[in-house]
Length: 347
Image (cartoon, rainbow, N blue to C red):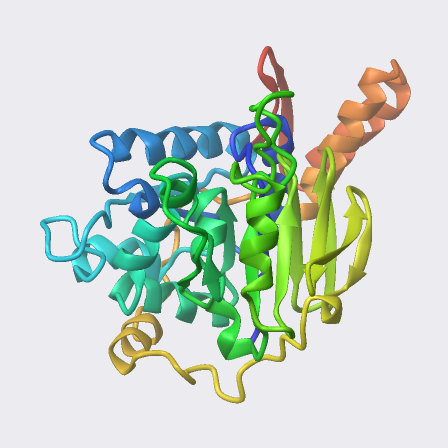
C-alpha cells in the first residue's frame, strides 16, 4: 500500500500559486495523468458544473505538458439524478490518480459525501496511491470537525462545530482544517480572518474542540503537501500555514519543510481496505488498467530539462538552452516555444 500525497490550498486553486502546487503534484504521478474534479461542494449552486468546469479548464491548460485526461464528476446531491451514490457518475474516479474538490459549502459537502460511494472510492484511491487536492470549502469538509462558516458568518447562528468527513480518523489523527486563515476582505471595519468568522469567534470554536485535536490554518494562496512516502510536509505559496493545538499556533512559512508527525501520527492502515466499504473496494480493485488511455506523458526528467531550458533562456544563456534542447530531443521529445509558454511534443 502506498498512500498518495494530499494537498490543501487555503484559496486560489486557479491562481499562479495554485498552479505551482498542481505542477509539483503532477510531476510525482506515475503514468498518464488522470484528473477528477468533483462538483459536490458547490452542488447546491445552479452553476456547479461551471464552478468545477473552471477548475478543470485551468488544469487542462496549466498541466498541458502532461496531456491530462480531466473529468468533471457531477456528484451533486444524494437522491437526485446527480447522486454521489451513482456508480456511473463515480466511474471516472476509479482510475483517477489526482482528485480535486474545492469551493462551495463545507456543510453541504459533508451531508452529500458522508457514507457515499464517491467518498468511499476517493478514500480507496488514496490508499492505492492517488493524489488528493482539497481547496477552500472542501478543506473544512474533510476534517474531523467542520467549521460551519456560512451558518455563522451569513445566517447568524451561534458558534458551533459539526462532524466532518473525518478523513484522517483512519490514520489515527484528529485533524481539522480552516482555509482563508489570513483573509482581510473586511478591511479595518470587520475582522474576516479565520475563514471570515473573525478571531474572537474562531477562538470560541477552537476552545470547543478536544484538547489533543490539531487545527491546520491555511493562509490564502498558500498550500501544504503531505507526503506520506517521505513523511514530511512542504509549504508552498505566498504566505504560511499554522498548526494550532490548544488554540496556540505554530507558524510554518512558505518554502519550509517539516516532519509529518508534527501534524499527527498518520500511520497507514494495517490493511488497505480497512474501513472502506466492500462495494467501493471491490469496484476500485477490479478495474483493469487501461493502456493508451491518454497520449504518452513526458517523464519528470524531461519536464525538469524543459524548465531548466526556460530558465536558461530567461537569463539569455543560449548555449545552455541549446544543449538542454538537444538533451530533450535525445529523450524522444521536442520543446516548442509558444505565446502561452513552452510545450513538449513527442518526436
